[in-house]
Length: 180
Image (cartoon, rainbow, N blue to C red; front, side, top):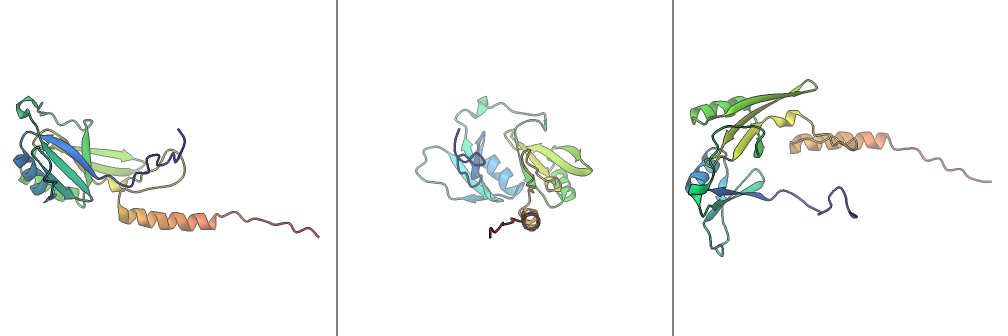
């Protein structure tokens, strides 16, 4: 495949995820009151029930299932299942709030090179997995190349400034030989 291999489709960002729901009302309640999303206008030309929510730079499009009784329900919280992950400011506050809201969750800790990342996993009303983490502790390092990235935009800007400064210092000196 030819073209820009780093971004072959010239993508710019994640826009939204769509989730099939048994009950739009229960899902709106969960995503607004538990995760802090807010409803936004949805095109009126759609001929099916749903709702659009927005928060943290992404949209969640809730779609009413035509056969909600046939949707499989998940009861076991499996961190290796499909999920969406949100970065948080305080794992302690998140865990306290989940307990107060009586939301069942699983806690995990990942350690890599002395860096610890805490994770909390729980389900939305339809069994879709949600992760809350302090994943920003762990740098994102591509397998190819030396560029270090971060999940946080603030940390990413700081890292990019450091990398820019380092690359300027490492610029090769080109010698030009002048012939008499």
